[in-house]
Every structure is written in C-alpha cells, then in structure tokens.
Image 1: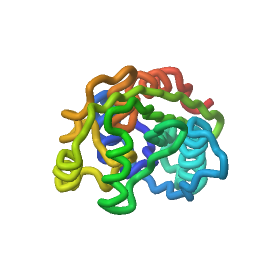
Image 2: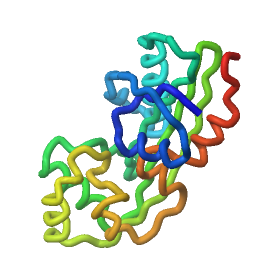
Image 3: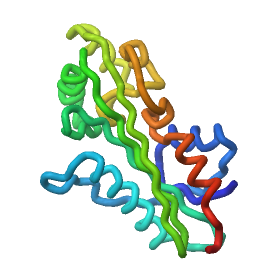
Image 4: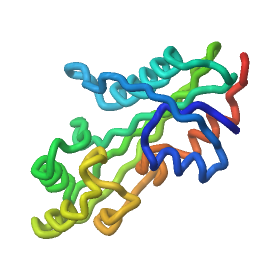
Length: 190
C-alpha cells in the first residue's frame, strides 16, 4: 500500500515501514493548543482529524492516495503531558509519572476526497518508582525532549516501565493493529 503521511515523526515512519506501507511525506502543521476544558481523548481525536484535513487541503493530489495522520498524548489524571519545554519540565513530568499508571492515547485518521475514517488506541502504562538520580540520568540521555510525557518507550525509558496494557506501537506513536485495519478497510477512490 502507498499513502500520503502527514507526520514528521521518524517513529511513525518506521512503524509504517514495519507493516510494508510506503508513503509520501507531506507537511500538515496545525495549532496543537488544547481548548479550555477539552478532555484528553477529545483533544487527541481532534488533533489527528485536523492534521489529516489540513494536510489534505494543502495537498497537490498528483496521486490518488489516502492521507494518514496521527496524534499521541500522554495523560495522567486527565492532564495532557505534551512535549517538555526544557529539561526542568521533563524532570517534573517524569517525577509525576513515577510509581503511577498513566494512559497513552493515539488517534489515527485516514482521509481522501470522499471519506474519513478514524481509530483510536488507549494504553495503560505503569512506571516504577524513580529516584531523582534515575530521572536526571535519563534526562541526560537527551531522548526525552521531543516526546510527549518526556519519555520514549522504545528507548532507554523502557527500563522504567513495569507493565503496559494495550498497544505497544500505540505508545510509540502509531497503533499498528488499528492502522492496518483502517488501511485494509479503506475504499480508494470512493
């Protein structure tokens, strides 16, 4: 399968390659600010949809391909933990996640001229207790600054995760089961 991909994430690109989906990268920059009192699930769904529709609107459709976009948020007690502003903010996020279970919500949107389809994945992730030193050592790895919640499950932070219940690939940034189902059931040109 070949699609347009509205994502700069190398992790999403790698996950699509894992399931033999090739893609043309497009830019779909949007304002990612949450609305006041917006629930995390509503926010993630809105972000994926807005990325997809914005990408589709600005697309030079030389190929008749669907466009895929996704959004992932880390959520602790209904608070969205985005990408950290700096190392101090990363420390605060990781300190708040330590010893607790949080959710990682990913929504996937697949659109073309005639249809829009969406899927979502919610995964519970349980962190072990973390000392100040463990958090500081992790932050020095420099893998935390470009990731929601200040960690990447596919990297060094994996050693802090006691348990996940749900989609590992959804935590990385693209739930492959849900994405493959969307792609398999999407009717091109309709």
